Length: 67
Image (cartoon, rainbow, N blue to C red; front, side, top):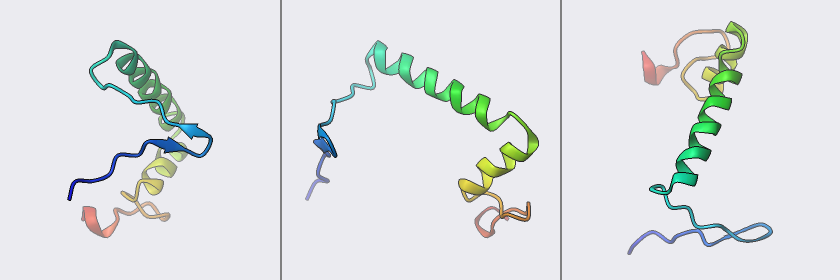
């Protein structure tokens, strides 16, 4: 059985996104740049992002999956 595609959000119908469209590419680049700026603001912020992603522990060591 094929996976079901999400067609709605909490407040109504979801916009269908075409990853080949120029608007999708523009929005993705904007979001990636915003994330990068946030994640590299300081060493502490970078560690917080890596902890949230599960790559590092709160104490600054690599998590089990990355050792």
